[in-house]
Length: 205
Image (cartoon, rainbow, N blue to C red; front, side):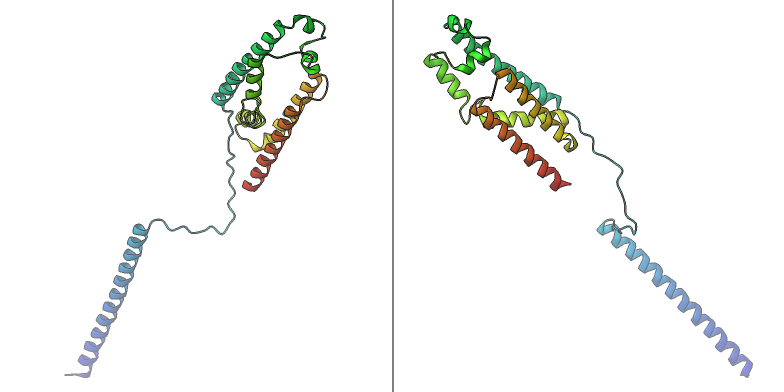
């Protein structure tokens, strides 16, 4: 065999071997890519954090809870009507005393009247610790009403606090002086609950 024949054969063999190696490497890379893709599909989407800082432009919408507002108003109206009925019943028995008063508020403020046992028992139950007009339930209703009006919007919390303070001062003016002790306790309870809501909102923020 000639030298040229050997050289030609070796060259062809080398060329074939190199091509086979390249083909094998490409096949391995393709196989690796398929396996990686399959593994990713089985494990789910892999989250890759962005190098930049993403800022959400979506702002939560707060909507007043009209159903709760209407429920609270209806409940308060019914209870107020019940209390008014008790007072009117009491006044009807003391028309002379009431006639000497400037108005119903001064009449009640002075306390110059008598109450029958049934009315007294009902009033005491209403303003008891667990009563409808007691400190806890009344302060809870005020906070519920404020939250329902704002839809839970923390930005409007201080507006509700200011509205409550204004309403309390108006009540004192109508009453003609400092409101009874139970009203003072209710005021403090409401303000404390406003503080709690404010602290909670700040913590969540």
